[in-house]
Length: 599
Image 1: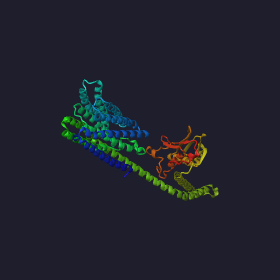
Image 2 (image 1 turned 90 degrees about the vertical axis):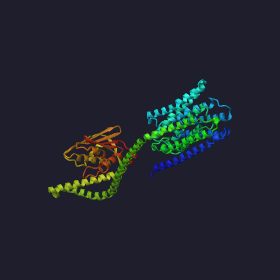
Image 3 (image 1 turned 120 degrees about the vertical axis):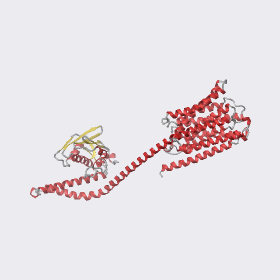
Image 4 (image 1 turned 135 degrees about the vertical axis):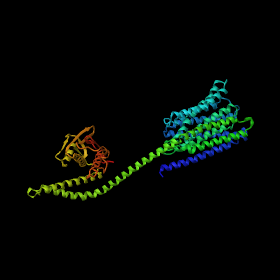
């Protein structure tokens, strides 16, 4: 199993433990709130006051720590978390003012100082959501935004109408505050719904899912509270209070996960919420169970409160069901979207797997080919050292003997014409063997360059003098004064190789043009011949080691030329019509550059 697979499996197991812990905390606080029907206001204040002081304080602390951490890491979401930290502080202040009015001060004025802080938090939270959605806004279609807007408006219209009817005849400021709650809440819920919709189609981390769920629940709670407050059925410990506490708990767990990610060194901590490696798993494995747990807790608490609460503060069953149905409507829409897109997602995932399989097969084939080629080259390298000594010595003796026979006085020469032709054949065979040995040695040797200054035309002429040029081949060489720094011995081998290749490509004779030009600090040498040309399918492979179209070739001549040119920090290329090998070389080469070996 790869390291990535191990980390993914560990992350999945860790997320399962977090979700289990989260559900246990939700169950625990729900059980505690079930005591409300059996306690008076004073007794229950010992539960409500700590809950609404501790949880908002933890949210504020976590968001502030994350904002500082991400700012130090120069993360693009540092600004968003800074806004969230300020909004969380507003939440905390508003909750404490609310608790003071509810349990310490007499009366519950509207609007109060708490309302100012509550409303001030909405724009900051909305900005945070949009900044968090920034990586996926362009990937989200117009239909998703339209669906989110329509769903938000479905909450907005009845809420605004009910609030306006209740505040009819009141002061404009108080009416504005009352209407601001549903309006700002509906705007805030739009990016949250868009994030949930993206989550169902693409994937996101668990922390992002928890934050989105928290904002959805917060929006439902606001609407639930508005109707309970309007018909006078709200009381301290009402089921809507539990929804707000659920929001705080979800955000605390989300920020706890995010803070752990931020503490990971290296590039792994760059992903905030979104992850392309998570496809559909987050919501299917964690979101649906968590949603069911929350809905069940709310239904359970609503039933118990409706059965046991005192008649003077009798809970409106209609409002309780409105809140539950509101949550169910949101998450039902999500589940329907999942079912609708499941087949398409499975097909997309299948196509991705097929593509990955094909890419893997191609990669394996390519790597296998490279390994085989590397093994062949390694074997050539091992043999070349032994063959060089074993072949060169007898070849030198044979070559010297042939030269001595040809230089002998007329009276001692072998006069038989057939014998002379056979001696010529022996000489050509010796030259061919020497050339092939030179090809092998030229490719496997990577000795440092011995730089000398030399005119290119003089060096090419020196190489031409070593080649047996047929009578039907015409060679035109530019004569100029361009001087380069190069290893004369190595470039002699390059030029001889190119000249011989050109001659062999012209079966019935022809012309070879060698042009030398300069451009800035580069010397450009072009070898063009009037041969048949190189087949187009062979052009990309012409410089590959062991590739040859000749029956007697090694396939290392042009590969060796490429190595030598690159060792001189130059480039070599080939083109057709006519067949032209182009070499570009720096005219000046330092000693340090000469020691760098080609890749």
